[in-house]
Length: 368
Image (cartoon, rainbow, N blue to C red; front, side, top):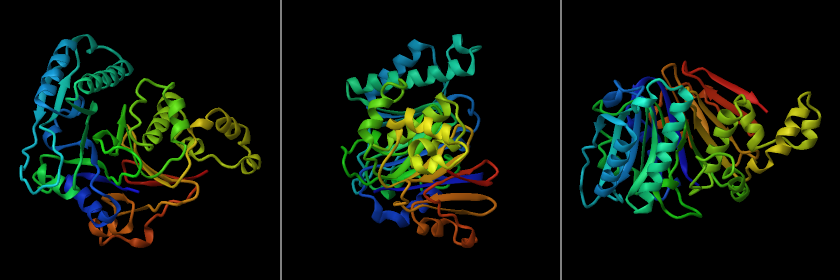
């Protein structure tokens, strides 16, 4: 089990708000990983929303490797934010020597390319940088995408926040969408890549639970897209399926739940759309998940989604007001940051629901 949460706000909020959401849930994690994805950025990045932002942690040699690669490929650095970290021996954090958050301009030859070609370039560049740094064990690349920042680290979340000065609400880091996870390692190595949320091509996802169909998910996904790599956590399967259903197949979001937790055949047979649902289950059977899970996703357009496993074995609650909506593994997280909300309007997603929060904070609910 882990603890997951997210915030969607009309006005930009600092990471401290998300940290206060997670702090009351501290018994559900073991300091094996903390990660945060911020989308729709303000603060230090507000002037560069259309420029790809590189997020990585590395050694000094890793910085030089990245510099050389990006220069060779024609990327031009136009901005950089360097965290003013707090180095104290009492902080429980496995800090990397360097953290890089840089905005780049596209290579000259991509100035008039299509959006799809630019997106492919960013995916391929991130994969190439990851392989480059892995070869010499010089760092980790988390995302390379416009208006998205990713931070991952190993240690106590409160100490990580102190190290990066995330408790300080000074306007440096702000975003309208924040997805965060505090990890509890159960069956994988403690590595930075394993910390949720995971990111690919504008899609962000974190989960709380276990997926016993990890092996068969992975076997199929390796053949579906070059970006489906790593698999340091079974929850990465959920991200790759989300990306595959929405980005590659271009299906409506309602079908994501039909892929990961399909209805029983007998129940499908009684529905007018049974032919479609049967074909989905038969053709994408290896993308079905099994086990207790609660999932939070963030889409390229800013919409935020939530859903659970088909047995509803992991808790999740959604609540908010006219200015902010939050999702939390436990209601105590919502109570910490939204104590005055109307709790009668809180939503506990059902086992057959997909819930989407749009950019106007309107909540839509779909039943399978």
